[in-house]
Image 1 (spheres, one colour):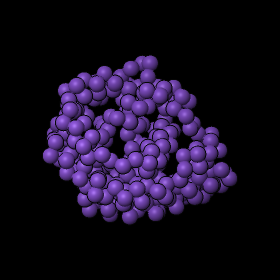
Image 2 (cartoon, rainbow, N blue to C red; image 1 turned 45 degrees about the vertical axis):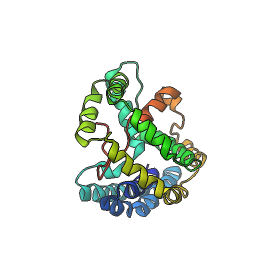
Image 3 (cartoon, rainbow, N blue to C red; image 1 turned 120 degrees about the vertical axis):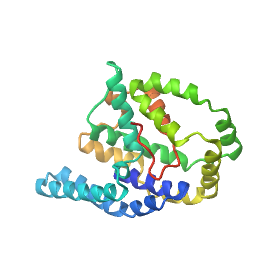
Image 4 (tube, rainbow, N blue to C red; image 1 turned 180 degrees about the horizontal axis):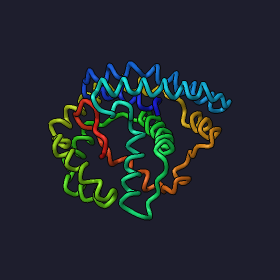
Length: 239
């Protein structure tokens, strides 16, 4: 997940002009080196080097979290997928969930698909402003409660506290996105292809399809819409 996390942080720096996000993003080269080195040794079964890579990754993650004062800098959109699935599993007996790392791995693959799609489109100011004006916060809150259950309450309270759906803030974010779209696409471009990472995960016996965790297509799509951007220095977890 370090792969997409680093791109999330870089994008946040551009959209909300956060110095924290810029500094934290500077760690992404170390993250990349550690995670790929770890994967290669997982395949070869070199146990002492596996332990070394895990510890190195934890230390780097700890530095980032300590700098920000919260754990959010060491997670990106892939963690949002995992947290929403966890909350659903707690609320609804029929909902599926798995280990955190497995869900984050699958979330990383889903994030790569999102990034690949974003590079094929260009934001439309008129459409974005119309959608923002038509947005019904209370209707949205009802849908969150239906989809997530009791865990939605803390998320709703946080969104109200932040003024997350303030039209003026939305317009400011939109203008920054529009003016920086080429730069954002350059950030997304170096990401590995979906199938490249999926193949690597399959070689480790990790699930690469939401259906393997009992998640249907609609659940995955709705999960992705749950956490949306805010003007916080570090975007909030949906918990």
